[in-house]
Length: 244
Image 1 (cartoon, helix red, strand yellow):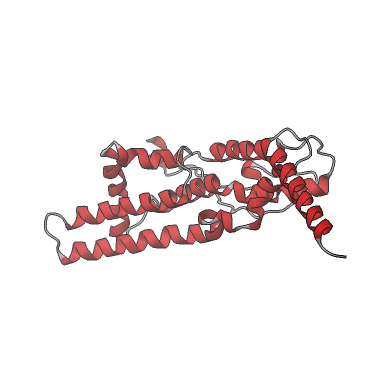
Image 2 (cartoon, rainbow, N blue to C red):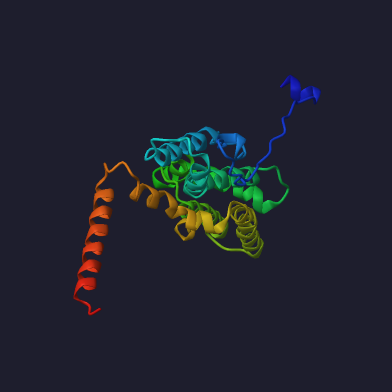
Protein backbone atom coordinates (compact mmCIF):
# COMPACT_ATOMS: atom_id res chain seq x y z
CA UNK A 1 0.00 0.00 0.00
CA UNK A 2 2.88 2.38 0.76
CA UNK A 3 4.41 1.67 -2.64
CA UNK A 4 1.08 2.38 -4.34
CA UNK A 5 0.69 5.67 -2.48
CA UNK A 6 4.24 6.77 -3.29
CA UNK A 7 4.01 5.54 -6.87
CA UNK A 8 7.42 3.87 -6.85
CA UNK A 9 6.41 0.27 -7.48
CA UNK A 10 9.45 -1.70 -8.62
CA UNK A 11 9.02 -3.81 -11.72
CA UNK A 12 11.17 -6.40 -13.41
CA UNK A 13 11.31 -6.97 -17.12
CA UNK A 14 10.68 -10.44 -18.52
CA UNK A 15 11.41 -11.97 -21.87
CA UNK A 16 10.41 -15.02 -23.88
CA UNK A 17 13.02 -16.65 -26.11
CA UNK A 18 11.97 -19.31 -28.60
CA UNK A 19 14.50 -22.13 -28.83
CA UNK A 20 16.76 -22.27 -31.85
CA UNK A 21 18.69 -25.57 -32.10
CA UNK A 22 22.45 -25.06 -32.12
CA UNK A 23 24.10 -28.51 -32.28
CA UNK A 24 27.53 -28.20 -30.69
CA UNK A 25 30.12 -30.92 -30.19
CA UNK A 26 30.36 -31.86 -26.53
CA UNK A 27 27.61 -29.52 -25.30
CA UNK A 28 23.84 -29.42 -25.05
CA UNK A 29 21.84 -26.48 -23.71
CA UNK A 30 18.95 -27.26 -21.34
CA UNK A 31 16.40 -25.26 -19.38
CA UNK A 32 16.29 -21.47 -19.56
CA UNK A 33 19.71 -21.36 -21.21
CA UNK A 34 18.06 -22.93 -24.25
CA UNK A 35 14.44 -21.83 -24.11
CA UNK A 36 12.95 -19.07 -21.95
CA UNK A 37 9.23 -18.61 -21.46
CA UNK A 38 7.17 -16.14 -19.44
CA UNK A 39 7.59 -16.77 -15.68
CA UNK A 40 3.88 -16.26 -14.97
CA UNK A 41 3.15 -19.91 -14.16
CA UNK A 42 6.61 -21.04 -13.11
CA UNK A 43 6.65 -23.68 -15.85
CA UNK A 44 10.36 -23.29 -16.59
CA UNK A 45 11.44 -25.90 -14.02
CA UNK A 46 8.88 -28.38 -15.34
CA UNK A 47 10.27 -27.94 -18.86
CA UNK A 48 13.86 -28.27 -17.65
CA UNK A 49 13.07 -31.54 -15.84
CA UNK A 50 11.28 -32.86 -18.92
CA UNK A 51 14.44 -32.10 -20.94
CA UNK A 52 16.45 -34.23 -18.52
CA UNK A 53 14.05 -37.16 -18.94
CA UNK A 54 14.23 -36.95 -22.74
CA UNK A 55 18.03 -36.70 -22.66
CA UNK A 56 18.30 -39.64 -20.23
CA UNK A 57 16.23 -41.86 -22.52
CA UNK A 58 18.27 -40.82 -25.56
CA UNK A 59 21.64 -41.49 -23.92
CA UNK A 60 20.63 -44.78 -22.30
CA UNK A 61 21.64 -46.96 -25.31
CA UNK A 62 25.13 -45.47 -25.43
CA UNK A 63 28.04 -46.98 -23.49
CA UNK A 64 30.74 -44.87 -25.11
CA UNK A 65 30.24 -41.10 -25.28
CA UNK A 66 33.67 -40.35 -26.75
CA UNK A 67 32.44 -40.20 -30.36
CA UNK A 68 31.32 -36.58 -30.16
CA UNK A 69 30.37 -36.07 -33.87
CA UNK A 70 28.14 -39.16 -33.97
CA UNK A 71 26.60 -38.30 -30.62
CA UNK A 72 25.90 -34.73 -31.70
CA UNK A 73 24.20 -35.96 -34.87
CA UNK A 74 22.15 -38.47 -32.90
CA UNK A 75 21.04 -35.87 -30.35
CA UNK A 76 19.41 -33.78 -33.07
CA UNK A 77 16.32 -35.84 -32.27
CA UNK A 78 16.30 -34.21 -28.82
CA UNK A 79 15.10 -30.95 -30.34
CA UNK A 80 12.03 -32.72 -31.75
CA UNK A 81 11.29 -35.07 -28.86
CA UNK A 82 11.26 -32.21 -26.34
CA UNK A 83 8.56 -30.31 -28.24
CA UNK A 84 5.28 -31.75 -26.84
CA UNK A 85 6.02 -30.65 -23.26
CA UNK A 86 8.05 -27.53 -23.96
CA UNK A 87 5.78 -26.03 -26.61
CA UNK A 88 2.61 -26.75 -24.61
CA UNK A 89 3.88 -24.98 -21.49
CA UNK A 90 5.56 -22.20 -23.47
CA UNK A 91 2.37 -21.41 -25.38
CA UNK A 92 0.27 -21.65 -22.22
CA UNK A 93 2.51 -19.22 -20.31
CA UNK A 94 2.80 -16.65 -23.09
CA UNK A 95 -0.92 -16.80 -23.89
CA UNK A 96 -1.90 -16.27 -20.25
CA UNK A 97 0.44 -13.30 -20.02
CA UNK A 98 -1.22 -11.65 -23.01
CA UNK A 99 -4.74 -12.51 -21.79
CA UNK A 100 -4.20 -10.94 -18.36
CA UNK A 101 -2.21 -7.99 -19.64
CA UNK A 102 -3.87 -4.73 -18.60
CA UNK A 103 -6.10 -3.56 -21.40
CA UNK A 104 -8.91 -1.06 -21.94
CA UNK A 105 -10.47 -3.37 -24.55
CA UNK A 106 -13.88 -4.58 -23.24
CA UNK A 107 -13.38 -7.97 -24.88
CA UNK A 108 -10.12 -8.54 -23.00
CA UNK A 109 -11.69 -7.42 -19.73
CA UNK A 110 -14.44 -9.94 -20.39
CA UNK A 111 -11.79 -12.60 -21.04
CA UNK A 112 -10.21 -11.85 -17.64
CA UNK A 113 -13.51 -12.50 -15.91
CA UNK A 114 -14.25 -15.53 -18.08
CA UNK A 115 -11.03 -17.26 -17.00
CA UNK A 116 -11.89 -16.88 -13.32
CA UNK A 117 -15.49 -18.00 -13.76
CA UNK A 118 -14.45 -20.95 -15.93
CA UNK A 119 -11.94 -22.24 -13.38
CA UNK A 120 -14.41 -21.72 -10.54
CA UNK A 121 -16.70 -24.30 -12.17
CA UNK A 122 -14.27 -26.95 -10.90
CA UNK A 123 -14.18 -30.55 -12.10
CA UNK A 124 -13.03 -31.04 -15.69
CA UNK A 125 -13.21 -27.28 -16.29
CA UNK A 126 -10.35 -26.83 -13.84
CA UNK A 127 -8.57 -30.15 -14.39
CA UNK A 128 -7.92 -29.47 -18.08
CA UNK A 129 -5.86 -26.27 -17.67
CA UNK A 130 -4.10 -27.59 -14.56
CA UNK A 131 -3.11 -30.81 -16.35
CA UNK A 132 -1.63 -28.77 -19.21
CA UNK A 133 0.23 -26.49 -16.84
CA UNK A 134 1.69 -29.32 -14.73
CA UNK A 135 2.80 -31.49 -17.67
CA UNK A 136 0.22 -34.18 -16.90
CA UNK A 137 -1.25 -33.64 -20.36
CA UNK A 138 1.53 -32.35 -22.64
CA UNK A 139 -0.57 -32.31 -25.81
CA UNK A 140 -0.58 -29.11 -27.88
CA UNK A 141 -3.96 -29.95 -29.39
CA UNK A 142 -5.48 -30.16 -25.89
CA UNK A 143 -4.03 -26.72 -25.19
CA UNK A 144 -5.75 -25.21 -28.23
CA UNK A 145 -9.09 -26.88 -27.46
CA UNK A 146 -8.99 -25.79 -23.81
CA UNK A 147 -8.11 -22.25 -24.81
CA UNK A 148 -11.08 -22.01 -27.13
CA UNK A 149 -13.35 -23.80 -24.64
CA UNK A 150 -12.76 -20.89 -22.29
CA UNK A 151 -13.41 -18.40 -25.10
CA UNK A 152 -16.67 -20.06 -26.14
CA UNK A 153 -17.74 -20.14 -22.50
CA UNK A 154 -17.07 -16.39 -22.38
CA UNK A 155 -19.15 -15.78 -25.49
CA UNK A 156 -21.96 -17.82 -23.94
CA UNK A 157 -21.86 -15.63 -20.83
CA UNK A 158 -22.19 -12.56 -23.03
CA UNK A 159 -25.09 -13.83 -25.12
CA UNK A 160 -27.20 -15.35 -22.34
CA UNK A 161 -30.00 -14.89 -21.45
CA UNK A 162 -30.67 -12.46 -24.34
CA UNK A 163 -28.12 -11.58 -27.03
CA UNK A 164 -27.91 -7.88 -27.74
CA UNK A 165 -25.86 -6.29 -30.55
CA UNK A 166 -23.30 -4.73 -28.21
CA UNK A 167 -22.58 -8.01 -26.45
CA UNK A 168 -22.45 -9.89 -29.75
CA UNK A 169 -19.77 -7.49 -30.98
CA UNK A 170 -17.76 -7.99 -27.77
CA UNK A 171 -18.10 -11.76 -28.17
CA UNK A 172 -16.81 -11.62 -31.75
CA UNK A 173 -13.89 -9.43 -30.67
CA UNK A 174 -13.18 -11.86 -27.83
CA UNK A 175 -12.80 -14.80 -30.24
CA UNK A 176 -10.76 -12.64 -32.61
CA UNK A 177 -8.53 -11.44 -29.79
CA UNK A 178 -7.90 -14.95 -28.49
CA UNK A 179 -7.02 -16.13 -32.00
CA UNK A 180 -4.59 -13.25 -32.46
CA UNK A 181 -2.91 -14.26 -29.20
CA UNK A 182 -2.49 -18.01 -29.50
CA UNK A 183 -1.86 -18.56 -33.22
CA UNK A 184 1.24 -16.30 -33.49
CA UNK A 185 2.71 -18.06 -30.45
CA UNK A 186 2.09 -21.46 -32.03
CA UNK A 187 3.66 -20.24 -35.26
CA UNK A 188 6.76 -19.09 -33.37
CA UNK A 189 7.02 -22.48 -31.62
CA UNK A 190 6.69 -24.31 -34.94
CA UNK A 191 3.43 -25.84 -36.15
CA UNK A 192 5.11 -28.93 -37.61
CA UNK A 193 7.19 -29.70 -34.52
CA UNK A 194 4.25 -29.11 -32.18
CA UNK A 195 1.47 -31.01 -33.93
CA UNK A 196 3.27 -33.32 -36.38
CA UNK A 197 6.61 -34.29 -34.77
CA UNK A 198 6.55 -37.69 -36.45
CA UNK A 199 6.88 -35.96 -39.83
CA UNK A 200 10.34 -34.72 -38.82
CA UNK A 201 13.22 -37.00 -39.92
CA UNK A 202 15.10 -36.44 -36.66
CA UNK A 203 12.18 -37.98 -34.77
CA UNK A 204 13.16 -41.45 -36.02
CA UNK A 205 16.88 -41.16 -35.47
CA UNK A 206 16.62 -42.16 -31.82
CA UNK A 207 14.51 -45.28 -32.38
CA UNK A 208 16.67 -46.43 -35.32
CA UNK A 209 19.90 -46.05 -33.41
CA UNK A 210 18.44 -47.91 -30.45
CA UNK A 211 17.30 -50.69 -32.80
CA UNK A 212 20.72 -51.42 -34.27
CA UNK A 213 22.85 -50.73 -31.19
CA UNK A 214 25.74 -53.13 -30.70
CA UNK A 215 25.22 -54.33 -27.13
CA UNK A 216 22.95 -57.21 -28.19
CA UNK A 217 20.84 -56.93 -25.01
CA UNK A 218 17.50 -55.91 -26.50
CA UNK A 219 14.75 -57.93 -28.13
CA UNK A 220 14.74 -55.42 -30.99
CA UNK A 221 18.42 -56.07 -31.64
CA UNK A 222 17.94 -59.83 -31.64
CA UNK A 223 15.02 -59.51 -34.07
CA UNK A 224 17.13 -57.28 -36.27
CA UNK A 225 19.98 -59.81 -36.36
CA UNK A 226 17.56 -62.69 -36.96
CA UNK A 227 15.96 -60.82 -39.89
CA UNK A 228 19.41 -60.07 -41.27
CA UNK A 229 20.36 -63.75 -41.11
CA UNK A 230 17.10 -64.84 -42.81
CA UNK A 231 17.67 -62.35 -45.65
CA UNK A 232 21.21 -63.66 -46.16
CA UNK A 233 19.98 -67.26 -46.20
CA UNK A 234 17.29 -66.50 -48.80
CA UNK A 235 19.78 -64.59 -50.93
CA UNK A 236 22.32 -67.43 -50.82
CA UNK A 237 19.61 -69.97 -51.73
CA UNK A 238 18.61 -68.00 -54.82
CA UNK A 239 22.24 -67.66 -55.84
CA UNK A 240 22.69 -71.44 -55.70
CA UNK A 241 19.57 -72.33 -57.74
CA UNK A 242 20.03 -69.71 -60.43
CA UNK A 243 21.87 -70.91 -63.53
CA UNK A 244 25.33 -69.51 -64.05
